[in-house]
Image 1 (cartoon, rainbow, N blue to C red):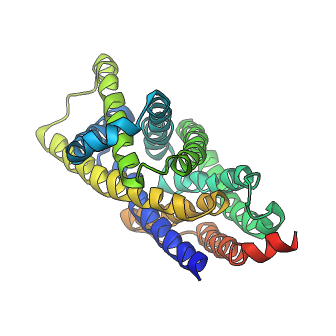
Image 2 (tube, helix red, strand yellow):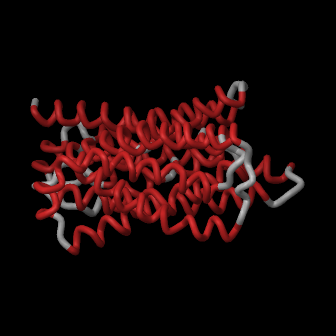
Amino acid sequence: MEDRNRRRIGIACGAGAGALWGLVFLAPEIARAFGPLQLTIGRYLAYGLIAALLIVPRWRALSPRIGRREWLALGWLALAGNTLYYLLLASAVQLGGIAMTSLVIGFLPVAVTIIGSRETGAVPLARLLPSLALCAVGALCIGWQAVTDLAAAATAAPLLGLLCAVGALVSWTAFAVGNSRWLIRLDDVSAHDWNLLTGLVTGAQSLLLIPLSLLIGGWSQGAADWALLAGVSIGLALLASIAGNALWNRMSRLLPLTLVGQMILFETLFALLYGFLWEQRAPTLLETAAFAAVVASVLSCIAAHRRPGKVQAAA
């Protein structure tokens, strides 16, 4: 019963994180007057400042538990899961659209599940094949849609967007696996504190990007645009980076790595939903088929984890 409750709470946290993270796909469209680098700096400066304010009361008790290895881990996790990931994702959205980007990121469960299947005590990969197959079907449907859009485009923007989305997928796969392992390793650091520490490091990385952004230029937007960017950045920092990451970290401690990977599909589902609402259109037939396949993939993966104890005993 305890394992069942852990799975239920973990899945609920994963769904909540996906709903909040789906909002990040909208930001590049809402604040389209700004480039991906500016969007990344704005979002993670806000994240870093909020994390700093929240962590100050806990710093004395927390700092002795974080050594050099932990800071180095936070550095690459912040880069892979936040700074580099969002820079690539924002570029993909502005070049190729929300639907294409979100479905490419939807490949993440396949990558994480394959890696996680080698972990001790993981559900055998053979039991996950139906879930992986359904995920692949959904991604192929949107992939076909993206290829059709690319053929009709007059520029190489969709292709560049697709490449950026693939880069974001690789970056976040590395983060999902590494972050889950570090959370399991650090029993004396809460998931919330680890999220705030990640925010501090990400905020520092965004400060380092400011000189590069000034060198590139493109800071001539009007006051209304800057107000919009500030609102979007603060909203993403609170909803996606603070609340969403906290839910994800909580889930990472409750679920096995193979199921953790599948939970990112909720982000794909919500990103698609938000994208269709923003564009004020209904999904195409291929997009509907992909949506159904992704939902079935999540349900299939959850079913594969219902009785891991009996499966291991039989093995």
